[in-house]
Length: 86
Image (cartoon, rainbow, N blue to C red; front, side):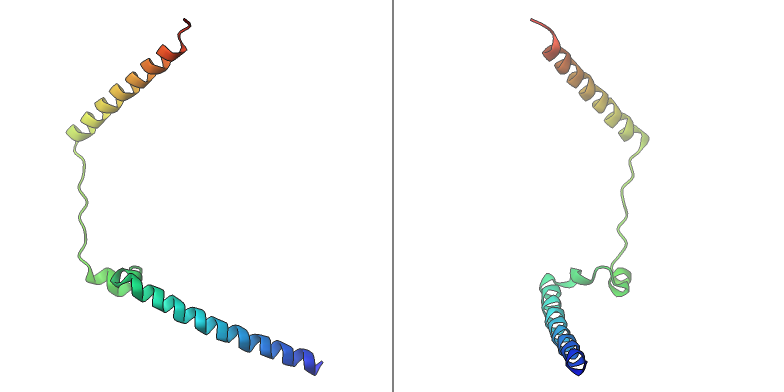
């Protein structure tokens, strides 16, 4: 039984060493990304200014709607032209 216990302890020590090496590699990769690497942290969120999003007005929505309707009409005509028997 003691050999089994000792084997498990060695496995744990090996895995802990491997984990430390992976943590070091991960830290290096995060450092290479620059300041955006910690974008999810509270400090970086509060220090950056809030970006205001532009909103689309009724006139803009109508223009986009009309353009999309025209696009779909053109698509349907193209499909209908392909399906016509010759």
